[in-house]
Image (tube, rainbow, N blue to C red; front, side):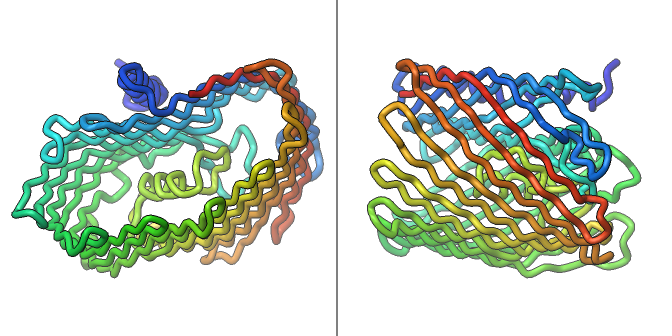
Length: 436
C-alpha cells in the first residue's frame, strides 16, 4: 500500500488539472477568458549548482505550459493560472523536475447568493534549506489545497449571516511538516451604503501533522472588518484577536491581527496596490498569500517548511503602468517571521522586482527584468542576498508562433561566503500562443 507521500505526488498535479478541466468545461458554454501557451526550448547554464569553486555547466531541455482561464457567471466563478515547466537536465545526474506554479479557484453556487462550495489550490516550489542557494537539488514541491462550503443567510435587506467551513491540506515533497487542518467561521455582514460594509466574526481551527513529533494546535479568533469599493479605489481593513493553543504547551499564546489592502487606479493606464499587516500564519497560508499578491514564480522564497505556527509582519507595494507600446511594473516587499516553536527559522526578508517591456515593431518585443532579495536569520544573524538581471527578445514569426532568446545573470553572496556565486544562462525557445 502506498504511503501518503506517494499518493500525494500523484494527486498534486492532478488538483491543478481538475480545476483546469472544470474551468474549460464551463468556459465552453460562454467564454470570458481563455489563454493557452505551449513552449519548447533549451537552456545552457555555466554554473547550474551555483558553486563558488567547482562550477558545472548544464544543458536543460524545457517544456512550458501556460494557462490563463477565467469565467464568472451566476453559478460558476472559476479561474486558473499556470506557468508549469518540465526541466530535463542532460549533462549531469540532476533529476528532471517540474518547476513554476499554478493557482486555481472554483466557486460553485448551488443556490446563488445562499449556498456555494469553494475550492482553492496553490502549487509551486520552496527550498529544502533556506541557507543553501536556490538550485535544482535544493527545491521541493509544495501544494496548499482547501475546500468547503459557504452558507449565507439574509437578515433583512442590508445584513447577512455567513457560515463557512474549510478542510485544508498542506503538502511538501521532501519535508515531514505535512499537515491537515479544519476551519469553521461565522460572520455577520452589514451593508452601510452602496459602497461600504462592515463585518464581525468568530472562528476556530484545528491542525494535525502527519509526523507525531510536530505539535498539533488549535486556534480561536474574533475579527472585525470594513470594506469600501469605489469606481477607481478598493479598500479593506481587518483586525482581530487570536488565541493559539499548542498541544503540550503550558500556556496559551495570543496575537493581535491587523491587515490593510488598498488598490487605486491612479490613471487610465497606471495602478497601485498596497497589502500590509501583522497576523499569525502557517506554511500553506503564507505560500498562498505570496502567490495571490505577487503571482506565480519559480523562486522558493515565499514560504519555508516550518511545521509550527508563527507571526508574520509583511508589506507589499506594487505599481504597474501600460502605455501603447511600453509597459513598466515593479514590486517591493518586506517580511518578518517569528515562530512559536522553531525559532531558528525566524527571519527578515526584503525583495524587489522590476520589469520593462517595449514593442520594437509589430512582430518584435523586448523585455528587461531585474530583482533583488536579502534575507537574515534573526536568531543567528546569518544574512545572504541574491540579485538577477535578464533580457528577453521575442519575435512573432507567424500568427500564433514566436521565437524567444533570453539571457540571465545571477549573483549571490553571504556573510560566511557559503552562498557566493555567479551564474549565466542563455535560453532559446519556440512558443505557440492562443488566447481569446
